[in-house]
Structures are given as C-alpha cells and as structure tokens.
Image (cartoon, rainbow, N blue to C red):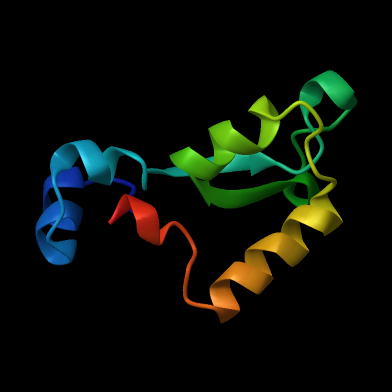
Length: 85
C-alpha cells in the first residue's frame, strides 16, 4: 500500500497510476459506524482502498473475524488482489 507517493509506488511495482489508486492505504473500520462501530484503535485497521470499499458494499458484509480468515486464506495462496497488478 502507499500513503504519500502514488507515482513512486506505481513505478516500484511496474503498474499504472490507475491500478496504483486501488492500493492507497486507508483506515478500515472493522465494525462500520452505521453498525455502531467506534473510531477507536481497536476498531480500525490499515486496508487498501479497494478492500475498504469492497467489504462494505457487499449485500452481506463478512464479520471482522470472517474477513480476517478470508484475507489470511488468500495471502497464504499468494492471491490477495493479484488481479489488480
């Protein structure tokens, strides 16, 4: 993920600026504000923009624990967001 310099990130990973936009570092609320989640450290984790938007746009967003398992499973396969690169 990148926080300050999209151009450097895109160059380092050999991707276009359009693709690099998906990897901007954002704060993901594990429990959304609309579901009573707080802005505390325990409820916010780093997530790329793509994941942050996608998780809550699902009809039935996975729980934080379920989403964590999904992320771990994909990381173990080396497949997390590889379609964006």
